[in-house]
Length: 146
Image 1: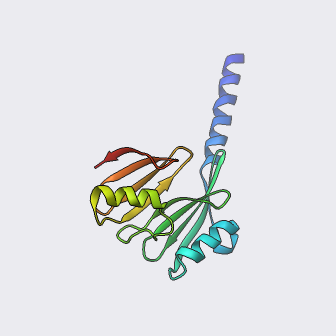
Image 2 (image 1 turned 90 degrees about the horizontal axis):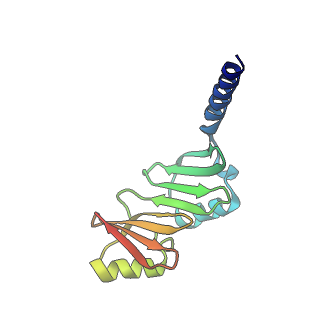
Image 3 (image 1 turned 60 degrees about the horizontal axis):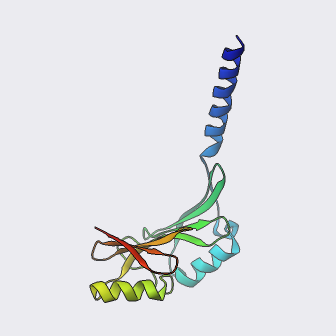
């Protein structure tokens, strides 16, 4: 009996935490962190925002902004950008670190970046030629993927 109650309590708590973990909420641009607002103003001032949301997953909070053009930017809790996906357009030049762009052009000539993603360990860039390059935080090339 004791084991059954303990198991049911565990399942109940697991159900509550799972339901709480996936929580998305629509927000306005004014509700984004100041750093994210400045980033949008600097690099996407001419874009019209279609939707912005705050995503909460267990211990992580992030923001996502989708523009009417289909471009998308994800931000960490503090407003630093996490992912910039411009689909069929190129990522604004000021976002891509110069050493990454230089290495991409050294290897593949006149290519541009369609998407860039960064985390605690590396940068991943998707190029117009279909290749994806992975760099460490010191901009050393780690991997090339097609």
